[in-house]
Length: 234
Image (spheres, rainbow, N blue to C red):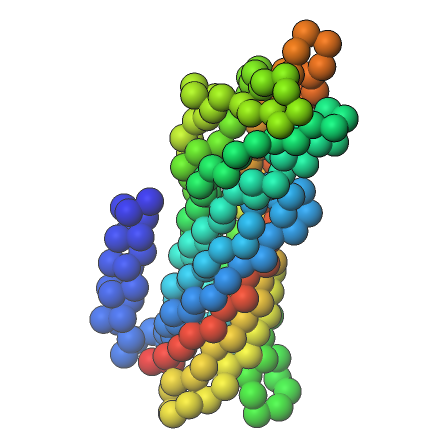
């Protein structure tokens, strides 16, 4: 991922040297993400940032874009606890509070269309590209043994993995630019992001020989990003 970030920065610097020949804009934004769907069941919201470059085409209002974004997420500890209490009557999961995280580094290419209305620049975006998702820890797809008492504990030793995955994804969104000084504006955006990465393996929890349940595999990450920052038009 560090190599991807470095390569993107080099491209931006090289593009900046050509500003006298190319109609370019650059933006840097930060904010938060908001998970939803089954992804929200397993992971919490986190911090988000994005670096973008835009090339203005001869078609008025249409820019081509390249962006590098990063989103962090934290595991919902209540997800497994809820599965235990749902499937084992009268049983709760004890002392389960792992500090598991996931991160999504995405490299997207697309287009930005500025609507020809009003003095404030309002725009729509559509992008596609690759998501590189890293899971610092997550449960493996295997049998996990738990204690048989009412406050069940589970042994996480050898039951977790650190893994990276990549998959195609897309994003659609919109935003607005609020002028600050000539060629510099406040850039506020909201974007829906999707990628087909698997974020939770299938695994089986055993309490004893008569009580067990299996949690299905989950994939397709869905989340929104809300960001604000600065855009500079060269």
